[in-house]
Length: 180
Image (cartoon, rainbow, N blue to C red; front, top):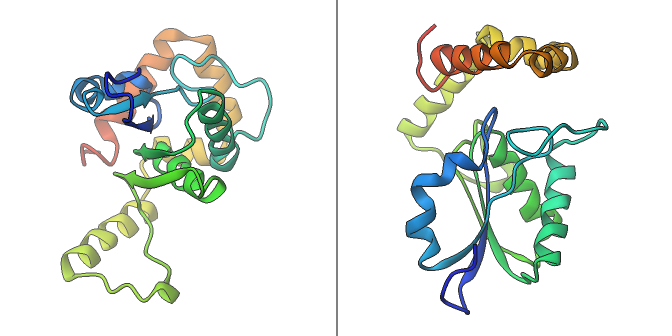
């Protein structure tokens, strides 16, 4: 979506798992006033259709996003991502540093590199401890996806009702809701 402002900075917004561009419906209108928006679906997710080959990790998707932005004519742009999209947006900043003006993420379950000299506040340390606890006691859907993603992928592709149930279960018992 091209903003009415010809000098607007472009933003590429990347959704999470199991989402799609629909995650951004509430922010499109306010952002569109001042930014050109590119909101693709991650290969194999949402409305993109299946990925027909292996290897679509965050770096490969980031390289695809850099090529997409180049083909759309954007020489400089910002990147935003949440959930799985946060890793893609961070990788995009690394693979296209001359083009990416800045990266914003709203999911970053990692500690800053100790060599960076960053000191976390007590509240940030407490949040990081919660993430450590979550990762040590992963919800079952995360463990299954981490250990047998291909099997699960075929099962979800074969059954729309199964896919809906999987998404609902992940939303109900996942880290966002805090319920188990």
